[in-house]
Length: 233
Ligand SMILES: N[C@@H](CCC(=O)N[C@@H](CS)C(=O)NCC(=O)O)C(=O)O
Image (tube, rainbow, N blue to C red; front, side):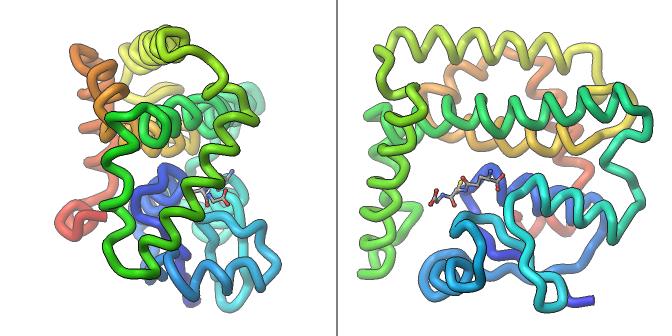
């Protein structure tokens, strides 16, 4: 089976998928999202977002659908709980990470001036990189206004962020993972958002002094294995 990931390395959703593939020890190739890959993903009927996974020529889009497809193809170790209530909780926590925490990280990276200053370097200085940056900037800023976070005052967003990070600290403190002894899909979703939030200054500062989160991140990183760590994936 040939697996290829259309991948934008800073994306929390791409990291979520890479971490799942690494945890399950599934070999895959990475196709960088900038450039022709972006057009290809759109042309092939995806929603035009990253990640997208090519499985033997079949395209699967959205990190949640991708995770379920990986679980179907490679059931061990399982990332979906078997018991219905745990499975439901896993879904709710995953969705919270993907659809709520994401916008706090996105705001700190793209809207907060200290974070926004860092973004252009992730796209590089080539003509393509600069064009992609300007396009993404427009898309992301529209999303942040539409979703509502960017309509709040900076102090209001800081309070939202502090409340969310306190909630994460409380959720992961009992450990080792969100739902107990085994890592599930919700953990990989949270890993993606936490790593994303650890880059821009505002959310990085909010994560400081949260020992349970730092210990949880170490446990999650260790699941990916030495080779992923070494390759900086
Ligand atoms: N719900 C999607 C979200 C993916 C997503 O928003 N990806 C961003 C990169 S972090 C993207 O491709 N944005 C471009 C766009 O919205 O057009 C998932 O879980 O895969």
